[in-house]
Amino acid sequence: MALSGLDIFKLLPKTNCGDCAVPTCLAFAMKLAQKKAELSECPHASDEAKATLGAAGTPPIRLVKIGGANALEVGNETVMFRHEKTFFHQTGIAIELRSSDGTESNRVKIQAMENLTVERVGEQLTADLFFVTFDSENGEVFLDTLTVIKELSTKGVILNCQDLTVLKQGLEILKENRPAIYCEAKPAEKIYSLAKTFEASLVLTARSFEDLEARSNAAVTADLNALILNLEAAGFGKKLQHNTLLRRSALQQNFKPFGYPLLTRIKGATPVEILAEASLQICKYGSIVVLPEYDQALLYTLFTLRQTIYTDPQKPIQVDPKVYAIGDPTPDSPVFVTTNFSLTYFMVSGEIENSGVSAHLVVTDAEGQSVLTAWAAGKFDGEKIAKFIKDIQFEQQVKTRKIIIPGLVAQISGDLEESLPGWEVIVGCQEASDIPSFIKSVELT
Ligand code: SF4
Image (cartoon, rainbow, N blue to C red; front, top):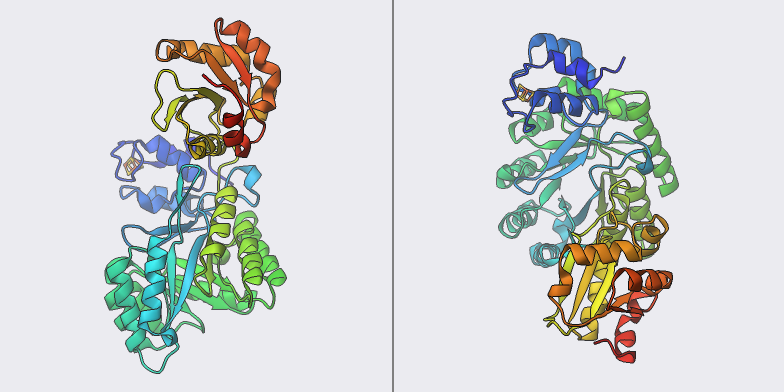
């Protein structure tokens, strides 16, 4: 039977020491009840607590970290569908580097990965991992590639090397970076020992559920818990089916051998196939996808999809409600108004900036909703906009008395003029992309 947060709290030391990185024992108990923490994070838990909590103190899908200071965290998911709550740890995107490509070619890709950061709705989006494959005559290029990663990057690394001597040398190079080891075949005892020595996580690959279960149990018996599972499949429809069954077993049956993050090596032959396969993994339970090549256009697309899937549906991304200066506005500059939904803010501010005109952008608190949704919910109307402008004493900061509202809510113009005496309300365009031509077409000040 699942224990409540209060039941768990009774078993904790109640000293609120904070050693578990949560300020109080009660807050930690709540996290345990939600399966978002593990009892082992409390170094002071009594034997009685350990015995009683047992499986209740372990999340159904373990959290696994790959990397050092900038470690990627995957797993710790608690729901099948995003709308039930949220997905917590976004899919890590890895790029494969092969020793057969040569160190210089790999260096170019590593540098490109380091330089690739895209800002979208206020978040920095980037790829997360290198998946380095040893497929050449000797280990030199493989090891050189790891050295280049160490020099240029803080991203995590997964080592795909079936030669145990070279693997050990690679782990030595990255020893501060807590890499992961990719096991193509059944792991040998020596791999378990290397994983323990270097605190590396293990990616277990299998071709059947039975084999995967056996490998997962064997790793746990060898005292390894930082596992990632890769159940191979012929075709990506089959892979989707596997992912769903693994996730269901972990969450709904609490089947421990499958309670780990999932990895997929994308096999597509063309960019379109790679995109389709990787997108499916991002949507359906892939914790790590390994792309066969570095392709900037493809990465941009996957970043956008990933950001959408891994945004908490109960908490829209929002910006602070306030007046934003676009360019270098003066008291005579035009005044635009919109809501504090991030995507809306970034699109509107970007298009005003593109027009080359400096302006004040009044962003009201609409609880992170877009213009039409906020209007329909009664959170973006004439009265509320006027109240916000008065509360922040904006009228005292500008001379202009013209305000441009989004064209989608033209119906609030009369209400706003009544609530904001002395102001002229101008109905703007419906699409943010039309803002530059709209600005040219009207007298705004
Ligand atoms: S480490 Fe343990 S005792 Fe300290 S606050 Fe966390 S749960 Fe309480």
